[in-house]
Image: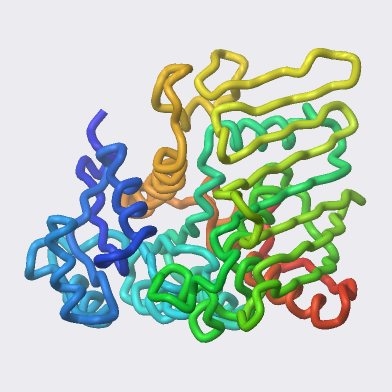
Length: 395
């Protein structure tokens, strides 16, 4: 089949951020081209114009498409016959909104890192912009791209687990056990700075991933939330540990725990879901296995690429035969692939699903910002229960 039929060409990507010293920018660039459906052709790779232009060679971006600012890039690219189809935003939180707004208003599709914006008000404005546009807007909750996460979603939504009673989702790290931000460590500096990260630290950075994973897998809609956030490293401005308790509309309870101060823990994102018929467990550090348990029966281990017992969503997200591990880049690429499918339809003049998409979208992004806002507010009031439902929330 021709690439991106019926367009019959690669999509053209612009990268925002990702300059020298960046981690997530390189991840975006790698995942975006994994399936040969896209070419990275332009970028504004740093807020420092000189660094932005100097970084272009690292991505094989031509000098005339290495821009010193996002505004310059949006204006110049809009005039080109071969303009970029979309931009990927891989910058600190406080810059997301203005960048996304600029490119949405210029008519481009957008893929944005999470959290989607600096605060809830900005997220609401982005929703309004997307709703009045034809642009695809994806948020890089990349863990939703793992094949067995999609398998779990299909099982939960298909009733194989029965009525969902409980969701326990944890994201545990240890890299900020000390005041790493006091050194010149770039990633630690902006993540612990309220001026760049927003009102939450650990919970905004990785707690949002843990929460989103439970929502994606189960489709349960939240109704109330109670949060407790803590700063354990003296002098740190934002939380480095926290727990939230969530009530869902069917009566289920959920917990989200996030830590960046647990010794020896790396990227231990895990989730357990209890249903009336069965329970399941998945861990990001062992992503090619999904454990399903039923009382009185042997535990079942589903493996990525394991065979015909996997559903359509997991099968479509798998590239290699069983026993050949797929992981972080491939999951990221699956989010991109789902967004590409939507972009191609838009460019071909077709109507697309706007809310319940396979890729995390702007409505997931605004719910993530509401999650952060309500956890922080609840924690200020000793864990008081607060309403937690956004009118744009997906099933």
